[in-house]
Length: 250
Picture 1 (cartoon, one colour):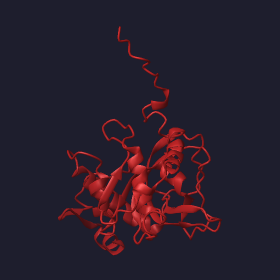
Picture 2: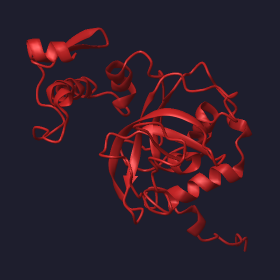
Picture 3: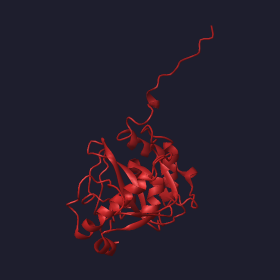
Picture 4: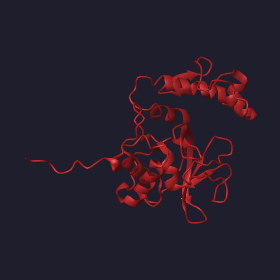
């Protein structure tokens, strides 16, 4: 791709069998030219940005989130064809959250997936929050691996294309870049904290894991982080609903 961009001022990728040229595509997602990139990224990223946006445009009219179709085509064959999203695209509300959380445990957590390591990096989407746990926006990251850190804490190690990746996301959720078994370029969080900010992930549909073995306490711990942060106004206030009281049969 670097050679194509430098020599031809064009990168060609394919979406569902159809070629997409960065030269022929309309504007990308970025509204201005990047200035804080390394020389290689400065050359390649504008082309990839236009191709990524064009893939999104070709999903217009489809029901659901376009990442379902774009990610496997844009990132490559190693992206899992299974897709989960916890947000209703039309309303922004959180839906089927217990199932979403339990399935991620069964797919990615070594204690529930038969101790299967993550073979290929997987694209994912997170809800970024500030130091007060307030929602900022959606952000793309890459899940690299899941394993125990030197302190025996199960952590998700991921690539966050956002400066040095070290961020305070509020409610005690602080992204680590060193001291917890991180390799060069990795960020990490304890498994349940990472999952509390996750809203999109891919998985291998042939590897089912053991979602039924995930405890209610594990689910509730993740739910607590969500309710105290970006999900505060996206979840139905079930705990606050008044009891309808006894039925009057007179």
